[in-house]
Amino acid sequence: MELPEELEETLASNPRESAATLVERLAELGWSVAVAESLTGGLVVSSLVAVPGASRVVRGGVVAYATDIKRTVLGVDAALLEAHGAVHPRVARQMAKGVREVLGQDGAAAEVGIATTGIAGPESPDGQPVGTVHIAVSTPLGTRVDSIVLSGDRDAIRAEAARIAVRRALVAL
Image (cartoon, rainbow, N blue to C red; front, top):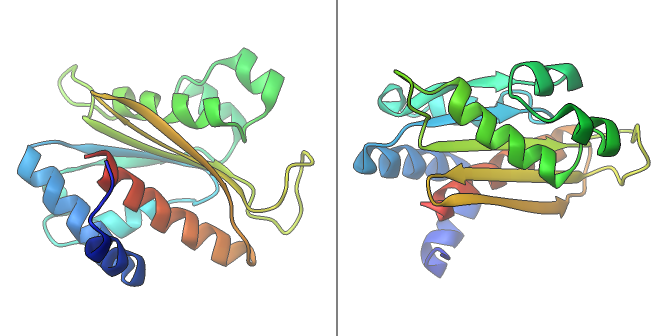
């Protein structure tokens, strides 16, 4: 599903609009969202909780910056992490699915899980390009991962990854 062009332009030019629209849409659906972040370090969930009324839909966030947290808290497969490292599309997918479970309520998963993993720089620890980002959105309908390479300095890469993650979640609804 793609957003109408006018809405996409509005959301791209105003990140707060994206977060507010996502919170509003989740509330309309009666759905909750949980967020797992690595390179964005809490920027995604912060953008959501900045919206008045976010407590109706936001379950919380896990900043899984360390690789072992991805495994122990979010349930990312140890063999996957060993084979491919923490910056991989399948890692993002498992993070998004895992955070839905971990931050669910009363034995039920959150309906939406958003996850980010990537390399913000200034150097790459594993040879992948700085700016490599994997964003996953998991819902009851499935999980989608977008892999992109962003440019800019560390702060710009992190901020843009957070903005894109919110927009991708909105598209998934």
